[in-house]
Image (cartoon, rainbow, N blue to C red; front, side):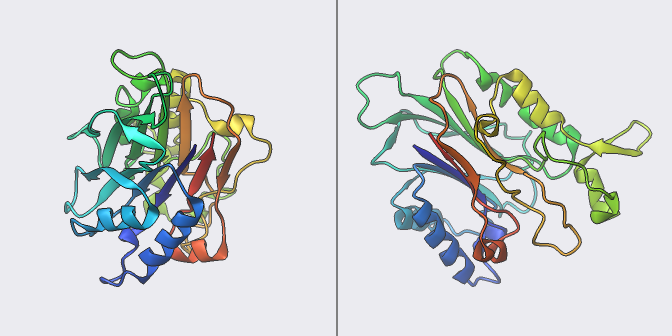
Length: 275
């Protein structure tokens, strides 16, 4: 099974021009995901998610509009119906809590004769606004599914733009590598309002609850997912992640797809997990 998460940057649309999105969809088709979460599906008309799904040979599990802002931003979770089927309709969770959205889908291999292959697919886009918001979003809404939880499968898979670095990401050698006005997004803020080190609270909460980072079992560090697009933010961090919970087989591959073309198409790179 192959899972992919990818932040498209403004829906892949530029003033209504879909040329960038068409290239992104073509690349995604080549990656052939069985389950996929796309963040920042901004400005998509109602039928566009279905058209993207058709181009990928997938089905839309759910489109979830961001909880704040203009209502134009959305997160979409897809599944490949020839490989995985929805056991029940997918649902949006955490409305009123999430800056963006959280999607929950109960999936089962199509050839399964029982429920042993079931898993919970979670697709999300955590808040850009800072440490406190992200920690609120993951507490309960995501940490619950890191272990046994009533009414849910024993296994779970989380695809996300976490807007927070991985535990192994280093702080910039100079914080001036990030504009001062953007640093509160990524740093801890003391009660005095002064900025401290990198905010890792949300990721630590997930991992301490039982979510597993496949990177721990894969030889070689995957490429960073951001830090190349904006001239004033040249900090290579892993903000995009796929985490596992429960008794999964060992991951066969966990990588960031980093090419010159993808760097030109969006400010995040896609992440692929193969199990």
